[in-house]
Image (tube, rainbow, N blue to C red; front, top):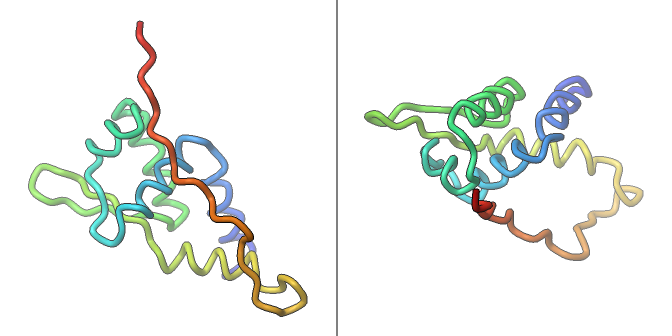
Length: 114
């Protein structure tokens, strides 16, 4: 991975909603997830979500396909793994290392009463 590609991917993930969307797509696996289900799970407006999807797609971190009337978004695992490899390429003096504690799953946003 080129440094400029890594910067683009990290910039796309450097926003809390996009990071939540990407983590949800990773959890969904290779089958992906419908845009409406993502909007509901994260309590995001569809037009806001479209903007975030576009940023993830432009960074190469997600793809989209149409299934009937639904738009299904999928994480690009090969790009995610390439990015992780780029970030850890020289980690620990060449010795393989892993996180000491796993990260917590993305939380579902709770709706605030009006």
